[in-house]
Length: 478
Image (tube, rainbow, N blue to C red; front, top):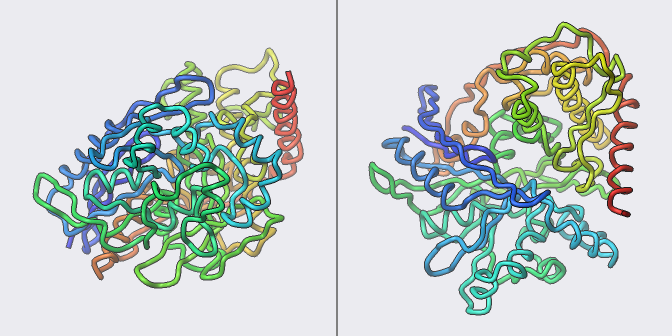
């Protein structure tokens, strides 16, 4: 049997086909444009994403079932009858609702939001974005007043448009700030706080099940799984036991640790309780999540500035670590995520000198992402023990300098996946499970062991983050 995953990510959409003999193939990849209409705004064209998903589905050929994984917090508004998008996709990185978030905090609502959703007040999550669409896009407001509005994360739009099923799985719903993390249903109080009409939201369902049929070049094929991309990667890595951790170093860097069947809501922790997945009617599996908003995105930005041309140029450096020489980069180009949750903080270099060249800057970017990873792993260790080596994937996991520096910073063994498409693979396994089948665990790893100890530079890095935060506060004040 063959199963296909459509991995709809922040910068591209790709299709993986996996069979039960261990053959894994990426059969199609489409990039899509990123739009930045104003500072802090990040958008995608929803019609472009639909076109790319359809192209990936057609390229998959004859398979037994599909899974679709999604970006998580990115959201969109569309018409209930025509299924046409009424808004752009407002991407998870977007911070246009920062003033609304400040107002809610000033009203003392963060405690209630966190107790119900498990999430802090932050522009990262979908709720404030959805309310913004109603209040600021005339077509969305008109559809709402006419009783024809649908709102949701991108998964619900994809499914409603392509299969006719207006659904969102519980892992994705847990990223909106609108789902009650205890009941796993939309919370009327949360919807009222953010100003999101609950009747416009999709049905919340399990990660595996009946999501309708997708029309492809080879016929109608069932969609049997839908999940957030980070949770798909967690599943693809084979993380199943409490204490199992993975980090995906993609556009952003996202670490997740399994907590098991028990919800771990520690309100003194800056980690986010989230639903990892729910298989059919089984109890949900929970995780804790910590995110860095710009990881590979920082390197893509550096390349766009001309600091380097090809990624092969930055696999090694002649210089000792930049942080050892006093040069620190704070990778907060879209804000500081866990454990700071400061949307307005922006990236900075500190310690720049005339001796630094373009490659010094790139080297410091790579090191900054590693130190942000350390901050999240230390937050996880405060909650409970972590099992063994830390498995990683994503674009930066292919960079030898980064993986070795990460091991040196974490003082742990690092296991980069040799097959880097763990998100798509995890989704494909869930598609199989949705049909009562499964795929074997085909994951193979490198092993990177610490060769030095750079953990003692963490206070310097934290001070740089604090200075970046202070600058953002000064800018906001003026």
